[in-house]
Image (cartoon, rainbow, N blue to C red; front, top):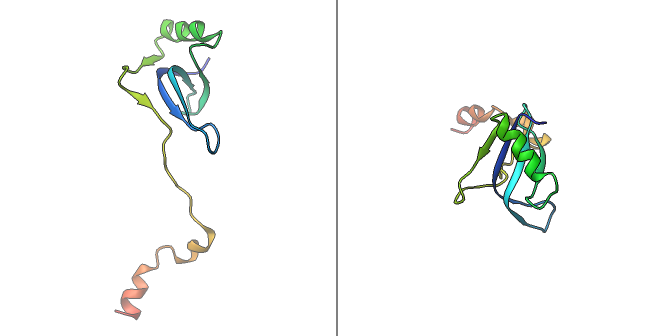
Length: 96
């Protein structure tokens, strides 16, 4: 079993061009913060999984008006940008 679980309304895009909404999904997260499992209330093991996390006090339930959605964060850089990193000061002295 994972370290933590959340029961919440969930929005996500499982693949390009599709969008999904799951009411009261159970999302399991490991100790590194990685999602290990997402199951809907129609899954045969849903009730058992939620109960296990309730019994171990590792379940967080979000309110009905709250929801989870993936972070929309772009944290990449392109290799051609690396040589210019930290060289903005040069332009002040050469051009300025």
